[in-house]
View 1 (tube, rainbow, N blue to C red):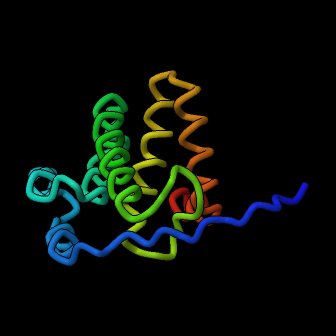
View 2: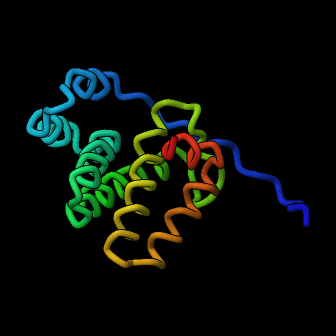
Length: 140
């Protein structure tokens, strides 16, 4: 069935060049440096997503859940400030959107790992609804 209602315009979050630059300097083994970026730029979802992904890779889904939820909520705040009404495209192709989308994915994975199936499914659906390309991009 075709949706006859107009789709809202895509939300394109503004770039944060200082946060991007700080994150780019974090070495692969730099857990402390990554936490410092999140502390310095607490609204920057990409830092929280990176922390969550690192925790998942280390087998710590509870910590990953906390980091991912923070990135998710900070991203929602930014999306709403930029006109998002709870639905509509959040394109993966727009680099500043990726921190939020990676946080959503990490939250889905962490929720699944701790047995919170409804949350995992809800986040997986949000990721697909935001941009079907995002799911493929974050899973490789």
